[in-house]
Length: 390
Image (cartoon, rainbow, N blue to C red; front, top):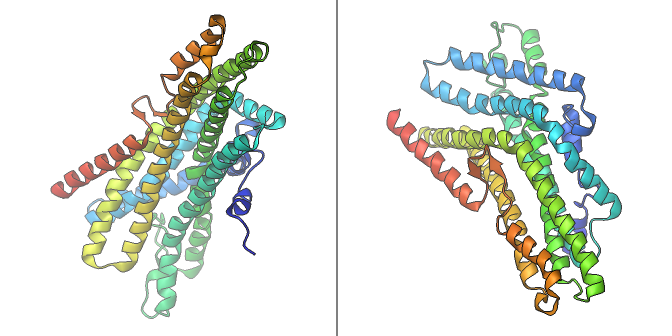
């Protein structure tokens, strides 16, 4: 007998809400509650050395357009990862009040009814899917680049093959590799690259998604409770007072979240626009030249970039919708059956909810599905400029 889909969904439900984000950020020493300067120093040093080797390779091939674009495609994301890690390290203390409230709510219970539990589970599972799928996809892309030269050599049985001394990652080897032992040492150094880049690319993003979806679920539950509040004066006033205080708290937490991640998301947005432009250009170039393996790589890469941009914009759209829902919930209560002094709290909630909550990128971009179209259009516009220049 088949199990219902809800059974499989429950497997992805995280009762502690923060588990996946904590795992990813703890590896690099960036978990706000328990930061480790030693782990962060080791992590950022490794990634910075790798990034520096990529930049050296880029400068060495600056005269070759094809190699330059390939180097930019690979080096630009690692530069963004270093910048994101440093910026999150500077702003991670801002998230502490929000984490404290999440733990408090988990200990008290995030829901009271089956309808509320369904909302919590949906947003929680969405956050878990983002963390796991983005980590797996971003781990897969650099791994493909790593195994490609070795696989080609194995298929050619090393007959007249110079690839054993070509590093799997397109980085400068500082000095010429002429022996198998030196080549093996460089390959061993590059083995953790996929994991390190994945941690840097998804750690802070996973926390952002988790906290945003947590706020969305609590705003949705708040609206549900306002709709179903009893209009009996003895019950209404204390319950409505508690709901208004909860609404105020969620608004404060949303502003903390936006402030903590605004600058980081600005860098990420520019990176997405630039990366999509370069990757699509590379995809068009490799398709015309008939390089099937490179075409597959760039298709996967471009899909990952587009999916990541869509996830950010979908995240912002959810927050906008859930924060705006409060005014409708207040309006559709039986406020006309209440004394005038009890309806004032509803007026304040409606007035405040008319200005929705946003996720912003450096105060310039507001993340929404409309912004996703703007990101894609900007990338394609830069692509047209790039094709006309080159």
